[in-house]
Image (cartoon, rainbow over all chains, first blue to last red; front, side):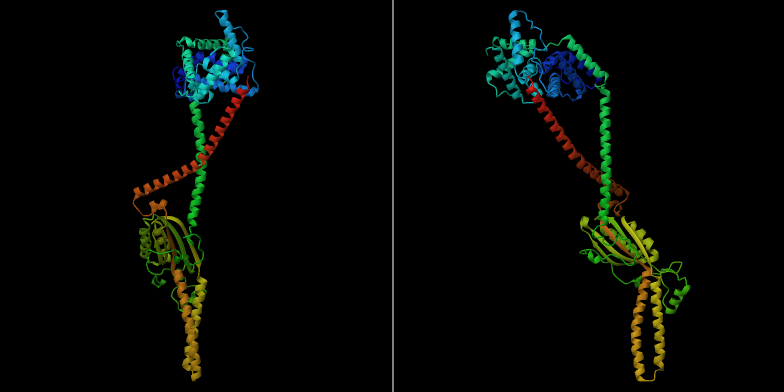
Length: 175
Length: 407
């Protein structure tokens, strides 16, 4: 990820870079937001809102504080939590409403395992699920994870490890 | 990265996780973790073409509504808003500062060392009291009576009862009469501002100008102590030369205040002159009676009366002389105060020095305005910053609570 692409003064180049960022991150960002909100329709709204905000605030982006991907996920997180706050309720469990399609794998064992992980993920509390998704799907470094979660890097690493442990426990996978 | 709170195994696992996410190969002992990552990604909500289409529609709609500002408009808009805010603050500060400066000037006018120089003086007489000005360390340029005043100008109209009384009294031509034959006593008070370093030279010029115009310095007090420097003078100058003296003194330093007054003393003068005439007539009659007296007792009585009459005549004559002097000579009270802002006009240096002093004054005013602006902007800015921080902190806590409540 090149640093500071959104801070380029040239408007056209900024637009091109923004499109590149959209192509690179949109799917993963949607997956993260949808996992938090558990509502596909709301997740689409929030994903669009996050990109819109990112474009409007692109001059505030500071490459020294992390990648654009992490910055975008931070914006999306705030938007998603604002949506949660606004609704004052939690969405349906992951997989129950937003993804009811069967998990497809190369073989039955893999498909079964993926279904198990989906169920375990849905059983985690929202904070553990969020940190797992930010790391696994969002592909953020621990430093970027810390900035998105507004905590220290050590605390982010600890939270991440504990969430992985709980996910394993939920999957009943030996560590 | 600090992972000191984690066990070495946990740290190693997180490192392996970073490698898996980056697409690097890992050892067999981390294959389970890689499978977990793969499963989580596969379990994540799918980014379907329908979702993508809807997100793009929403973004397009936002762009149509111009919620996405055009980049070339952003900076001028911010600059315009900033400039407007700055101009408003500047205008506010200028209004406040001008009020403060006017207040400062008023405070100067109410300086305790200037008790009598700033009120209009319709009545006669010099008002300043040099003895009240603290320890004098300067010069006293001589005191004297008004008898030493130079040539007296003015002519008597020579008409009317007043003129006849003056003629009968045998007094000298009354001084400072205006074209209607009235006698007017004039006075003025002048406050100058000079730098402390120029204080002595300005004081010397005050004396020199007074003498040059035929006046005298009745009293003076010059005290040079930095910004507390102060000088005062009580001057007497022929009334006809009062305007010239004020002009000369005004050119020595910056004029902070100038008050002039006049009183018509014609009636007082005529009454005193008539009294002298009466006493002289009575005295002449007594002298005749004394010459005709035949008895010792009558001679002694007339002599006693003459002594009383002589004393009264002397007093009345002196009074007439004082009134004549008041009409002939104007009293001028001059005060010189130390003021940095008046440096340019304080007689020090040429045009370049005055320009430099003016520039310094402008800088001082600018600095004062900047300080006032800072005094306004800083607390307001801190309050706004604190409010912003508090609001941001509360919002973030609220978000975290919303996440905790979610399942």
